[in-house]
Length: 116
Length: 113
Image 1 (cartoon, rainbow over the protein chains, first blue to last red):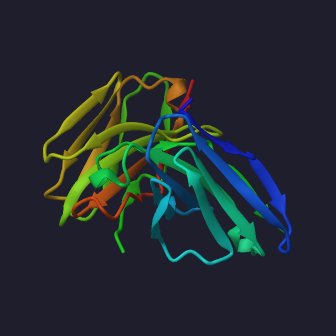
Image 2: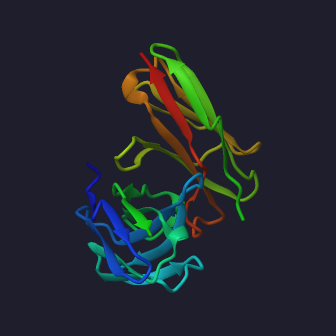
């Protein structure tokens, strides 16, 4: 157990649905991240939050909307997704935001999303 | 766009044998290199964070070396066991570390009993 949980673990949704992914960390960290892994591609950073403020948005389409209500919880709201958005979505946390690249990131197990 | 390459893409190794694989990254503007181990249906788990050229880190039967001048890191597993079966990811950090982790696609290791 890494101390980072994600729900649901699997999600199937239609293109017109609205759904949310949830991430919770029990490590007392101040930074949280959303990553996407599509088939045969490396993990891609989507969003970074530091102390509940978004510090990075890597050109992610607006149909993905993150929310960080406090330093322990991170959500990814999904709206009118496309089939090509089907992927594994991973949440991670670290002590400090990006931390000069030296802080270990602790990952959740991911949500496997399928968009029909 | 930073290019982080891992080879081989997949690897079958007999139980008890030792093995190694490679992570290649840009040799300029190096800041740190991370190694993660990712078992199927579980969370990626941090193995090492490496920063210094010539650095060598060890955790049980797993060790890693770093060459920042030529832009590569090796991960070694000694006496492979079935529980070593996983995907091993490396992630590069450039500059002052403000740009986050750039991951490779991973090496998928299967240990055959």
